[in-house]
Structure formats: structure tokens, C-alpha cells
Image (cartoon, rainbow, N blue to C red; front, side, top):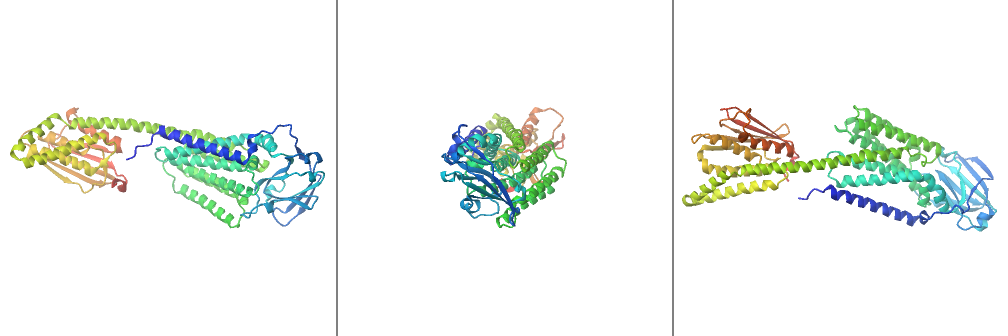
Length: 586
């Protein structure tokens, strides 16, 4: 059996894997965009081109309008090397030409065939050649959706490195840092959830919280203009935008799933239905987009409203706990604020509230789950130490010197009078001792049939001493369950000791029964002995049964009750919650 993975091994491994993943990501980004590591000096000249004229005409396609901006390319800047005409567009088809005839850029032609009618969010980047100096540049823009119909681009004549390091990264720094923190922390918590021995729903909670942080980070990053330029999205900008849209939908879906797992008493039927509806809705929308039946951009607002309503239904279908309120309501509030900023500004770099809230939850809730797991692990270790001490104590009580001496003396006599019986007694006595010593190293419950075998070995040895005075019947049809080692045998021994020890002419009849009742495995040990006064603090009588009771409670939540009166015999009942039957048969 494999040893339990300890936290001392798990946490360093998880940190190492997460750190390696971040390093590989940075190496890939630097390899893709070498200018990311070189800062362009401010002395490098750049221009913001102002249009000489703007012409607008109505069209039948897209948002119903097409605008043509006319610029004059400066002669001095066109002669410099490394200069580009660059501007950022959202869901707009672009076409550039020189003097109205020489086509230098067409976003429709450059895109590879794929799903959807939007080119996404991207940078138009056209190198400026000396022959362009003094010529007229025509930029024709056709917005695809009504939401970007009135957006006017800022046209730069600048180098890639200057634009990235002097303008884009400074304006997006806050959001880049927040997304990096959320993504790294989310991945770290995800790895901890995979490797740590978490209990109950804590593993799912930690995985879902990390997944929400990761999907939210990807959604935010795909909406930043600096990320588009870093990844050089010419040709893949449509895929990048659709990735962000899917991550936005996944963030809402995972948030609802996480809200369900925050509940200690279960999700409830309404919660499961709401989650199923949102999941089905997301799946259907993606399929419809795949077949070009809808445009995902136009349904995202409706999907967000539906997700918000389902969040509120799940939240208030029953009295919400404090941490459910602190997740559900701020999630919707901060997300709504960021979406309003996006609608007004056209960019996510000025909308940090949602990411700030996600990061706060990663450290408060996420590491709260980890802390609870560490405390639970510590309690388990303490419980194991107590359990081992209890077993050793039980072992010491079971191996009584006079019992061993009497048994060995009886075997000595039998070796002369009845060697065959002596061999059988030696075999039973050896099995009894072996089971006792094995119990010390056993930390988990054992199958009932093993404990029953131990009990019968003990009785076989005692039968040598008491003969016909000891009668034991076993009625055990239910045997598929587990219990702590040294549970049944000490109870039976207690009955033998305190019944037959009262006089040389007494006899005892003991009945051992097992049943499956009300989801619990029930064991009863009943004898017709002299009974006992349960109100007396007789340590010699009660200490063995008290030891068994404590180990039952510590190991698997079992209970032990005693019914006895002087002169009326004793009945000991054990109840053990029934575990998965398939697991018990392994």
C-alpha cells in the first residue's frame, strides 16, 4: 500500500512545476517578440497621423457604414528605417492603399479561412517604404458590429518596439500584473488541489477557484492591445478574440459551479438545474458559432445576463451562507463594472476591479482551503498517534502473563498425554499471538473475517482450560465490513474472564451476532454471565471495553454501548457506519 503523500513533498513540487511553467511562458514570449526585452528610448521619433479627410458611405453589409480616412505620409519619417503605420482595431475590416490604387493591406485577404465574420481585435501593421514619402494613404474601415460603429482609430507612424515599450506596456501594466498574479496563483492552487490529500469538497473548490482565475486572466489578456502586439496576431487575431470570448463564457460557468460547491449541505435540485442550463447554453452557442448560425459577439451580453440571473437564483434558492454571499454578489458587481468600462472605453486596461476581486478570493478563500487541509492533516496525524497508543495499550492488556503461562503449562502437559491435541493448541495459540502483534502495525480498519478468525483462535485456546463450561455460538451472516483490529476479541475475552472467573462450577453461553441494519453494520456479543453494575468505577472491568470504544470512534465513527445488570448477563452492541461495499471487498 502506498504511503500518503505528505504536504512537505507536495508543496515544493507544486511550486517547482508552477515556476517552470511561468519560465517556459516567458521564454516563449521573448522568442516570439524579441523587442519585449529591449526598451526603446524616447528620443526615437514617432508621429500620430491626423487624417486630411474622412469620407463615409452606407453599405449593405456588417454595421451598415464604411469610412475612408485619407492621410499624407510625412517625407522625413518615411525615409527612416523600422517605421510602421500602425493602428488598433476591434471587429473592423481594414483596407490600406497608396494613392488609391496600390493595395498594401487587406485584413480580409490576410486572414485564413475560419469561422465567424469578425477579424477580432488586432493591430494593423504596415512597413513604411521610402517610396511612400509624400504620397496619399487611404485607410478604409468597415465596422462589423454596431458596438464598434463609431470607434475612431489612432494612427501611429512608429516602430514596433517603441509602441510596445513606450506606450502599450505602460498603459497595460496594471492589468498585465493582475492577470499574471491571478494566472500563476490559480495554477498553483490547481496543482495543490491535484496533489494534496484534501477532504470532502475542498479539492473541487480549490480546482474550480483556480480555473476561474485562469479563465478570467486569459479573457482579460486577450482584450489588451499590448498582448495582441506581443503575440504578433496578424493572421491569428480572430482565433485570439474567439479564445477570449470562450474564456469569458467559461468564467461565468465555472463561477456558478464554484458557488454550488461552496455549500456544505449540497447543491439542491434548483442549483443543479441552473448549472445544467448555463452549461447547455454555452455548449449550444459554441456549436451554433461553429456552423456560422450566429455571431458570438452579439450574444455575449445576453449570455452574461442569463448567467447573472442564474447566479442569483442559486444564491437565494435557500438561505445563503456568508461565504456564498461574499462570492456571488461581488462577482456579479465587479464583472458588471468592468463590462460597462469596456463598453465605454473600448479597452479592458482601465477595468481592473474584477481581477482585483478574483485575486483577493485566491488568497482569502483559496489559501484558506489549503490552511484547512494542513490543519486537517495535522489532526489526522495526532489521531493516528492516539490510535496507535490505544492499540499498544490494548495489546498490552490482551497479552496477560498468567494467560500465556497457563497456556504454555497446558501445552506441556498435553505433549505427554495427547501430542495431537497439543499440536492443535500450539497452532491456535500461535495464530492468536500473531494477530495480536500484527494489530500494532495496523493503522486502518481490517476486514471482519480477520477479527473473527482472531477471536476463534483465542476461544480455541481457552477451550483447553474451560472445556464444556465455555459455549460460544456464532451467527454472522453479514461479514462485508471493516472494523479496528482488536475489537471483537477483547469483548469476547471480557465475557469469558468475568463469567467463568466467578467459580469453578459456573458455565457461560456467549452468542456473537452480526447484522446489517439502517445503513450500519451491527455486532452484538451477549452472555449469560453474572452481569455488572455499570455505575461502578471498576477499572478492571471497564478499561478494556472503554479502549475498544475509543478506537471505534477514532477509526471509523463507530459506537459501543453496554447493557448489563447484576445477575442478568451483559450485552455489548457495536454499530459501524456501512462503507462502500465494493471497497470493503477489496
